[in-house]
Amino acid sequence: MVIPRIETERLVVTLLRPSLAELMVRFRLENRRHLTAWEPLRSPQFYTEPFWQAQLQANLVDFSRGESCSFVMINRAENQVLGVINFTQITRGTMQSCQLGYALGGAFEGQGYMQESVSAALQYAFDVLKLHRVSASYIPHNGRSARLLTRLGFEVEGRARAFLKINGQWEDHILTALINPDSSL
Image (cartoon, rainbow, N blue to C red; front, side, top):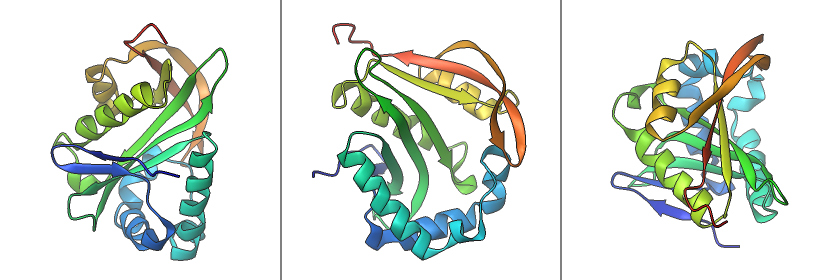
């Protein structure tokens, strides 16, 4: 299995191997408070190296099966995770689609890292995975996500009530999608 390695101007977007689990643990611990408002409740095990060794192995298996693509964005020295980009629920057949999720470390907000890395990951999803549609959703008061998705060309398709359980509460989400510009697929 070939692990994708997407180089952007400042970052590398790739899948982490289980041997680098400590990088994910550090990212998650450093951003625990920062990401709480935007993610599901996490168990204490979520912040441990054994959890991430197993999760990163599962991510590789899911990638090899074509079910998901759990990228990390890391610095060029490849010793620090800045954020994550996930293409999940990859569906083939007549849909050729997936769900996009992402998170960025608080120290890196406002520097263009998300647009740089998600743009590169979307190009991979369209050009390599040959997906037709990528869907993404965000909590209505998450202005950063709204602006990011708009800049990337996503269009709002509606609002889903009590869509995802985030930080212990069912939250409405704005539903968006981006269609592959290559309509021949």
